[in-house]
Length: 261
Length: 261
DNA sequence: GCGACTTTGTTCCTGCGTTCACAAGCGGCT
DNA sequence: AGCCGCTTGTGAACGCAGGAACAAAGTCGC
Image (cartoon, rainbow over all chains, first blue to last red; front, side, top):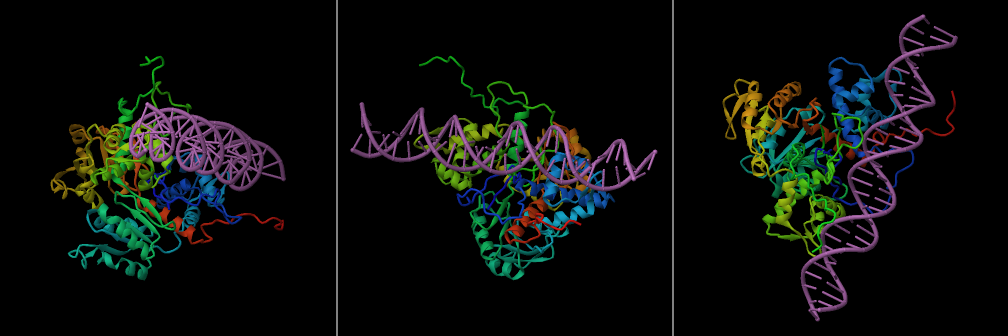
C-alpha cells in the first residue's frame, strides 16, 4: 500500500515524512474502524521501532528505569512526542519515576506484531543480496532468513549464510511452503517487478525493495522502498543548501515594476 | 541535523514520513530566510529524487515529453502533488502538452545540488560495506567512491572495487585530501559514533548511517539513518494489523459502567 | 485566424502530526 | 500521615503537507 523512501525517510517512510503512497484507497473519507480501536499514526510506528532499538541497548547496559526526557534525548526526538508515541501502546509509565525498560520493550514488541513468527526471503544474490544473507542483524532481531533465490544457474544450489539458493521460478512454491512473510528484493531494476509478482503469488504480503523502481502491487501488499541513491541525493540537496548555492535556492521572485514588453 | 528512517525515511519514507530530527534548532519560530527565496519542503525533496529516477528511465526509453498525470501514475503519487513539487524547481512545463523530460531532469539535478562534485567514503568493509564498495549504482548516479576504511589490519591495503582500503585512523586526513563530501557508515554499532566523529573532523558534513544507533553530531552535519531491522518491524506492524490481530489493535477503550472498586 | 481541448500552475481547504503547557498521579522525605 | 517535587499523560493550538478544484495558458484542428 505504502511505499516509503527515505528510510524513511522516511520515510516517512521514512520511514516520514514519508514518500509516496502508490495505491490510492477508496475516495471515501474516514476509513471505517471498529469502535474501541485506536489507530497508531504511521509516523509513530517508525519511531516505536527506534525506541525499541534504544531500549534494548539500554537494557544491555543494565538500565531498568528511564524518564521520557532522557530517552528522548538518546533517541533524538522531542520528549512530548515520545510520551505521546508511548501512550499509543498503552500507559505503562510511573509518574514521578519513568518507564520500566523491560516492560516497555515487551509492550512495543507486542504492538509491532513481533510476537508472531516472521520468515524472510532474499531475492537476488548479488553484492547486496549476498551481504544481507550473511547479515547477522536479521536473525538476532527476530527475522530469520528462510529462503534465497536467484536467476543465475551458477548460484542455484550453493549455500550462502547457511541457506541454499533456489531458482526464482520456485519462489511461489517455496515461499508458500516455508511460510515466508517478508520478501527482500535485491535484483537489478528490470527484474524487480517480475520478482515482486512472484512473491505476491507465493503469498508474501510485505516487501522490502532495494531496486530503484516503483513496484506496482495489489492493495493488500505493503511495499517499503530503500533507495541508496535517493538518500544520497537528499543529502546532496541539504549540503548544497547549507553552502548557500544560488542554484538550489531557486530565486524566482518576480521583481515588481519589471518593464512590460 | 535530520535523521530519517525508513526511507524515509517514507518516509518518511521516509521514510516518510519521516523519522526523528535529533538536533533541535534554536527555539525561534520561522528561520530567517533572505527574501525571494523559496524553501522546498523536506518531503518534496525525497520525491524529486524519485521523479529524477523515473524520468531518467523514461529518457532511456526514448520518451521526450510526459504529462503530469502519466508521470504521477508511474511514480505512484498524486498528480496534483507532483505538479506542486515540480513547481518548486520552477515552471518548466508547457500547458496542453506536458513536461520536456530532458529539461526537467536538468532542472531537478540543479536544484538537488547534483551539478557539483560529490565523493563518497565507505567506512567498515564488512558484508555490507563490501557490497556498497562494489555497487555500481553509486558511480553511475554521480556518487563515485573515493575512499574505503576499516579497522582490521588484514583488510587495510587490499583493493575492493578498485579502491584500496585505508585504516580508520587516517579518515580525517584522507577525507580532507580527497574532498569527501558524503560518509557512509557500515560498522558495528559500537564503532559507529567514533567513526562518525572522525568523519566530521575530516570535514564530512553528510553522513549515511547503516549502523543501528542514533548518532550525535554537530548542528551543521546532516545524518540520514538506514535501518533494515526498523524497516522490517514497520512491515511487521502493518502485516499484523492487516491480519486483525488484537494485540496490535490495542483495545484499551474503557467500558462504561465498569464496577468501581 | 479562431475555437475547443488539453494540461499546467495555483489557490483554498481539510486533516494529520508536532509542540506547548498543565493537571493528575506517584514516590520519597519529614 | 501529610507535603513536596518530579514525571507522566493529555488537551489544545499551531504549522505543514496533501488533495480537490479551477483559472490561465498554450496547442491542435479546422
